[in-house]
Length: 459
Image (cartoon, rainbow, N blue to C red; front, top):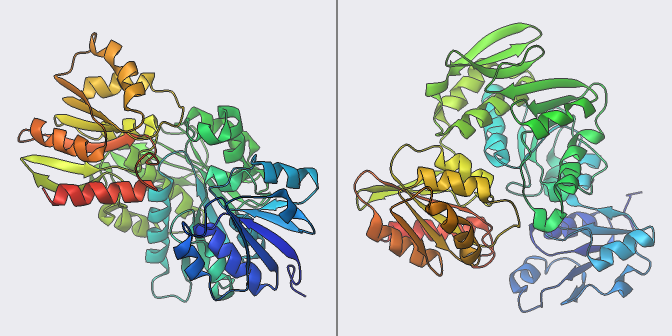
């Protein structure tokens, strides 16, 4: 008998993960209640997509009454674990679950799980490409998903025991999970999502859960240069593989030595490729490639496959994405940079005169260190959106000590682009690396990046 057969379950949230849960659970014979704080009018598209399923809906609220006779409460990624209905469920002993947990419980194949405050999508895509290159011509398939692309629950019945799953995991998913992937990568930890997690301690605890439930024969890939990530390597139960720009003293690792990417396994070192042979721009992307090589080595991928992908992979949209040269300047879309640390990595990728576009909705993370760096690296800074006033208050006192030619505050992204177009000269770089979420103006960073791309292309 299927685990969820005739069980009553509640799914909170009707975005991507919620819809995947609805399909999987109804397929398992569950009686599913979908609840979302949005109205039916706001959820027209989702309701149409789910119209073929026998579901019950409670929209516009999460009333506690829907917990009656409920076997489990499933949370989509956008739903916090401390909303009243989730707290009440825990008080009643009703388990909180999510799509990633269900997938790991049921997946027959080996799973690589990748998390971190920055770079996890690029690293996940690199690992996906490296493993696909290595498996070309074989019957082994690589499945990509999780927090990137599509939830993998829909693919469970097609995944074979000899296949490989490459899965991006967010802190929102990890905070609920009582399973860890056999190969777990923790890239880095910097302040992020503190508006959701409340404190760095809670955020770090969520990230650490990718290691918590591993076993002795598993592998953990850890960022050696990142103090907060590397501090957690002591919790790894199995093999530890380090990666970083510095050369770790001993053990399996990927690192840079004399301008070359090097992989060391069981005491033997192999050259992967020259650092200047990496297609992606920026030191942070050197780290992403090193991480991908370390992760791929855990499943025996050859350095030849690693080198091929490192030298050809052009990146993921909205991550230092080159849009076009216009008005003599190169325009880049780094909309993924929703924290100051991510924006810091972006500005350090350029030596050209920089016009920096910052703003959106603040995540309540520290800005002071970034502000100093941004001012010293920029020709001009344009602040936009909901956070512009706060950022102006942080930046203005610093400008007196570290003067820059221009600083402007505008209402929105469109005005930021218009202002930038008046400031640029031949040889400049215009960089959208907002350091904030998009939620003041756009539903997500992808749509913000697409809007930026469209506006720049139409200039």
